[in-house]
Image (cartoon, rainbow over the protein chains, first blue to last red):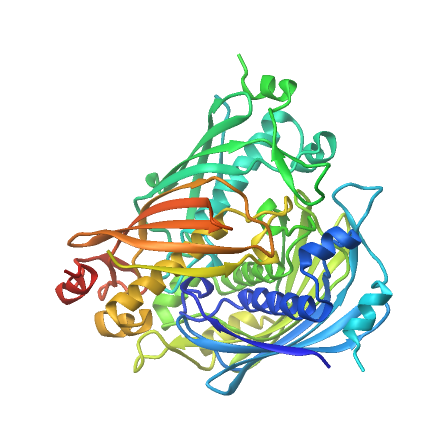
Length: 140
Length: 140
Length: 140
Length: 140
């Protein structure tokens, strides 16, 4: 299945008074890793999706994470993200964050495809992933 | 001029490895204080503005702040926000954040009125504040 | 088991371009709810714990969450947090976030007790929860 | 004077319901740019400073910013950061954030050198910058 990896420098502002990453920040990092992977696989930016499909995001409907080792400001961590499953209107991803080769955080998430609701400005609704995009998400 | 005050508990996640508020978080607090003041004065929620006026926010175009005393997690601080000036398409606000009666942060900001651009989905543009709203922002 | 509830106004800055809460922000809200509950039950502020016990936080080692309904800026949501289990060096909590009485997010987390490592400035290590604090966390 | 430049991809989670960067996030980006510059000029990581000097950060005491053009998720922006002045216990920096060559945000900040207060665990105090570090910050 498609996957990517990127290195992230832990910033001072990511960390809490204990000097380690404030854990909600990990989810923000994973969210961006998901976007980088999806954009690459679909060959479209999130902004192009927004304009082409009335797309309004792929909100997370379920996630879980285990935090095995803390990371501190200044650390360089590697985040590996993989598409784990794709269905009609949702998809699953896994994230593995490691430091110096040791697994520090692992996470799993399920997301749904959402579009802007034309009948209610500013609101969104779930919808099947467009078939041509499903095809790109499930190569082979 | 209209003003409000609220007490905010500094959260663990607001603070950095030095144990004090990570300063970008102060601007997030001020942003919410601005919304609470504007909503009260206009008698409409930001969401109602969104729906009634095609409103898309009142982005800050200029701000400055002085940080006189640090705040640590667990501190209860008071944020006083005042509307300082209102013009055709922008307005100014001041924020004073104090702890135990001592001024800790003071900030000034100028915001403009923005609406969704109907010709470019997902984009916004500046526009004069609707006159009936200007009237509510400038009592007396 | 001890529990608490609080109402939180969803802020503009909590939300993403889809107009709904950026999900990492929910974890920041849950983190603060945990602190409010633990401080009340222990009768000490997080800062007092810091000073009295060399305490450096209670990092999350595992969490999971289901997001059933989105929340938008301006919504008032209720977060109910309960201590679910306490062991020698860790404790479990549940969070239920609801809007207009409907469950919107439910989450579970396990945290460990951490202290500053005197041999490595700026680092921390896990340690058993002081017995007098365990007694307060497990009434009855 | 020393300066650096880096490219930053605007993330979904950096943006607000108007689809543009929530302005406190710009300050978080500037904070990290400052750290990257200071670390390069001093030849030490923020963590090494922490350990070598009892360093606890260089909190901002004053900042101002003008936001000339909005940035949206997916944009690649360039942040140029320069050391503008160095005195005995503080230093000034400027940040210029541009998009496609157009200046979008410009900001100025003054920071002080802070160390951990040995008499009050978890607190910090301002102090002169160590002379050997001042020398590295003011080449020529």
